[in-house]
Image (cartoon, rainbow, N blue to C red; front, top):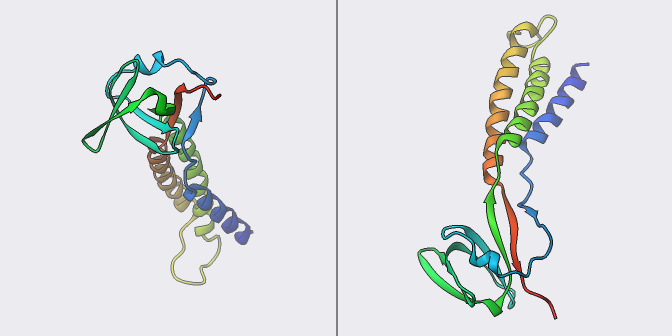
Length: 169
């Protein structure tokens, strides 16, 4: 039984340590309307994919009917509308869902590790802690660490919203 509890604990810890999913991409269908780029607010983060295959990320400085200007590393760069294949807006996501998922995984890991770390009979090495002491400590520690990890992962994720896509011939 102790081996089974430890195996479950290791699986839960491994799930908690997994890297976050790459950037989520949300599209509402291809948009060939340049007006959505012109209407964007200065300072918005954009990723522009050029027809030559190069991608540029930066903050919007200004957009007109023919030119898009992005600021990246304190340097402004102009792009002709005809050279742009796609433009995405980078929007931050809420960390709420990831924090709650991390909290749940942390609680489960804390219960598993607390159960596996407690001993129900005389210890074979050193002191043992009663399950009524170590499990709640594991739950609190796991919940805190899990929520923190979920929050960090949630804040690092962003979604890409398609603003413009050039018509393909």
